[in-house]
Image 1: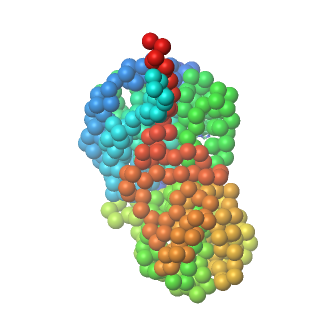
Image 2: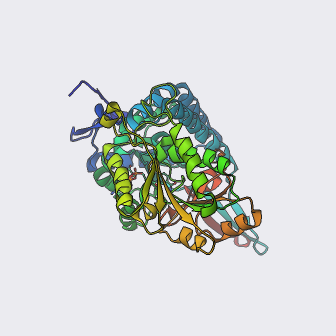
Image 3: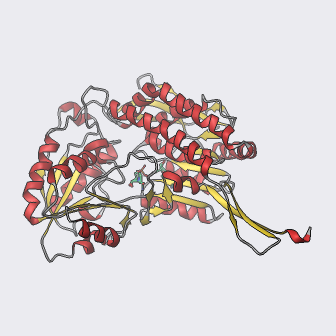
Length: 482
Ligand code: NAD
């Protein structure tokens, strides 16, 4: 095996190996070559990390908001200063094109500043009582937060969770996605360089089934912030049930796109074509299945294919690359199997392209459009999570809203029509957390994602996302008695 760099975990302010000495290796998805050696945390390491976070909690909680915010702003500055290194890590280990990854780092810095600013405004509430009595709610942190990060955005997802948990006074133990462990360990080094007190942030690496399970089952964890698949989320909820932990769960999705005959197809393809193929379609809120009216079906396919054809697929570190590889060989096979299965069920590959021999070695999936799908096909019912557009034709008289809602998931939905009355009526009827009408803007810090059905519990982002990491304690006093 070529010489690769080794990394350590952050526990209680110290950089350490796993107690067992065990390690595992992460891989560059573009080449399948080994990239980094990282520790494999066992139960003993998880326990040490949780204990370190618990020990650090009272002092971190006791800081004034202004004092905590000093750290938050320093973290943001450190991220900006180290953005080139962080972006290179994400490009190498996740396959994100470098420029996109650099933009992600700027976004990650903004999360810490936003959380600090919002935390200043999160106050308690006083409720009116009869004379001589006082009753108020005091908002405070929950304690030790276990933050489990998915691989689709290893930097920004860590930033969203850690900024919210820390700003309001929790300490945390972070479990990165195993395939992107190096990226998040480097990110942890950057965060720690802001001079955080020991134990406020701890990062342990390992597989989900061992390290992740051990962390989410730990009796001294107070809240779990988890993003990942619905299946894993169900397991996490089971572990959490034993000690009744609060869980904020961002899970899978299969988001319907409702395209009406009056839709502005150029605008639609510009917005959702980008979402479909950027980050290889590994977006929880991206388009999952397009229902396109028969009058515009052919035109939509032609325009989306022209968009797909314009995409530069290649080395994430090369200038101009729009799409790199998907995160792993396993994920590549899973996505390509969906396409093979759809064709066997009667769908048609409307657009794809050949891979170069270099791309064959890596975990590349070519931009693909699968047309002639039906609502019942597996590719339309499950979460593909790749650069594959799944297109279904609908006609007047079809129960479009029924099909859109007929899913175990409820993350978000997209509506494209110029009929405002119809669009707003659909927004009411769609059983999802977020509805995007003729747009998809996720750039505002104030927005949050709401998850319904198997897509999760609670909210992430914005002011609501911060509140998830707090509790409101009610205190009532009859002061006539004094
Ligand atoms: P995953 O469920 O495989 O893993 C998520 C994380 O959980 C990883 O850190 C993994 O190591 C850990 N894990 C795995 N098994 C575990 C276990 N038994 N106990 C504890 N932790 C465990 O998900 P993924 O494949 O990394 O991420 C992609 C998924 O995330 C997709 O389904 C996507 O829709 C979802 N996602 C959802 C949102 C949202 O906002 N709802 C955002 C991003 C991603």
